[in-house]
Length: 258
Image (cartoon, rainbow, N blue to C red; front, side):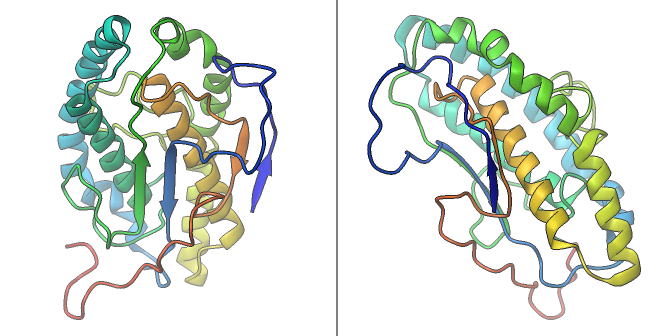
């Protein structure tokens, strides 16, 4: 299910004919809701996730520094150095897994793995297509001027602005400290506590907001020249992705938080 509000993407050529299905957006965020969630575990996930928050604090310092290097490289060569790109995508991916486990979704009780790489068996995934060429001119303005309308929207969703801004010096590099995402995740947690069920409409809406935030983050981090769509693609899978594989419980005898 998706709510779509179209807008003309800055930085793209206007007036060009579009035929056939629209190209998939190069930032893809997919997830699968656990079939069975603990009623109470979400109350202590802030504590269980502390090791990830500590590691991510250092990874985000590296992310910011490497993004500055990438900015200079794109300005001079029109290319995002592939090793830097892969590392920064890995930081986004790691952050998304932790936030999906914690308070940007509460969508799984499976403890996030400590890796920059995609983990096929984990229920949260993030991929960004590598751009062979990037505009040298857009790199000067897209991360602050062109994306300003999205910053205002993301501020409502995440609370206090973009989830990656100003977080490198803290132990909580997330975006669920406030805003509509955090509020709805709290409501879902309370419903889960009393009923044992995560309300699917709330999950779909929360995932749509998370997806919007991550798309804006990748664009502002110079990973693509395609303007983030002004639409809310709700649910666990991208509109043009195959259905996500069901999230399976951990093997018998292994706690969900190990």
